[in-house]
Image (tube, rainbow, N blue to C red; front, top):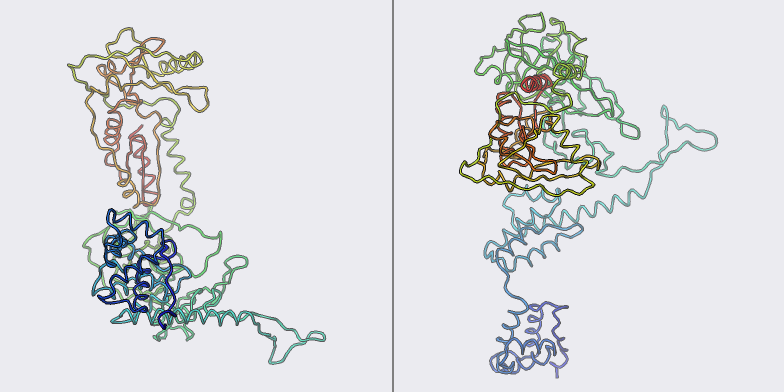
Length: 634
């Protein structure tokens, strides 16, 4: 009587419940009904067949036909349906899904861990399951605050990882609730002057301000002076101040008096409606023998930026010991400075002189001075020997005030734009920019064909009457510019393909050489550069130019033997090409080889068939490369 009160089990419905879960509930149902053990085998089978439902029963009969379900044991029936409903997944694929699973937005840590355990069911991790779950939790939790604490924990276990993740998640949630409650309230702040309250009219002048939220982007961190994070999560929480030698903040926001140089604070507006940022001006101590650089080698981090006020650096080309060096004019630098990497590149193995000069960056961080060099500086008609400070790092070479006092720069030439120099260069080589068909002045191009091959002659194709006048005009134009020649007899002839241009008023004529010369000619297998190789080379430059050659292939003249192979048959008769035509299978390789031979040795120049790509690190190098390219093509 007591077992009858335990209820019943529902029919099997795979759309509602997974098969494995149904079997687990069914086994517990047998335990509750006390139908376990060897004596109740037939009773378990009968109960299962009775409660499973008609749809599942029909499926089961189909799976074991011609046998009947009553002839099988309960365990055998479960095995058959398990193979049908839940076939064992592949281990590799299950591990892929496990390692790809990351925490979804809004998903709690507990739910995420539960999903990971479910995915790991068929991964066969064995004794390493806890470690795999721990690692996946650290990688996939996608919360920097949680990951930071997990990674800082020594000998992290799965249980400890779950505790840390859940406690951090709860703390963040509670903090947000507290902040939302604080945000809904406001403080009444009364302005006072000289310790007394000012009153205007009958009431007191009051203003309502919102309480700043912790972590709000408008709150400045006292450790680094930046916005958008809490003091507890600041990256410089353990940094050492170079001013007071204290721990937990930077020298830029240190409240103690600055040593060495005096500082004045001001503000700079970053635009309408934006917060005003603090800036610092470094003043040299005139009594000190040690000069300081305000912004050496790009080590200074920009505090505030003024929209639309940025100006590019002023660069001057000087000759240092007969080596051309681009230097950045910096009137805020007391000394002229070069990085050790640039020094080793210009003068490898050159020894440095010791120096007692000490340099500091904007944030009062000391710069490592490697030594100094005495170099012969040449600029226009001036030549003088000056000291150059070498520091550790990698950045622009600075032309400081010490050199500016000695070298008289030609400011009128410096201030003129590089566009004028480019314009002069284009005017100098104006002939190569003229309209019309250009001509390569090198040797004529040959097209090699098997001499034992029988020539192939194709009849002219019929053209629509509406296109005949347009095709005839294009043929006359090609003859007048020298691309085609009229011939009376030919052993080889290909029909033409005429394609209307976008304006519908002109046509492009190409010979269809697939049926004539292409199958029997020797293919020029000259390598064409890969796009990946071009990008890898161009990535090192800062200035780029692309020159597109007009009617590229047709700038190469053909020799007499090649002309006999590239004849086209039209409704106006036979014409032979005098220049390399489009449609020849060897044309890309031939043209690539000619252009690479023509421009070989020019620094920063790449050729991709009819495109010339120029990449340089400075404007001076770029203009020089352009002039060499123009001179080679002139």
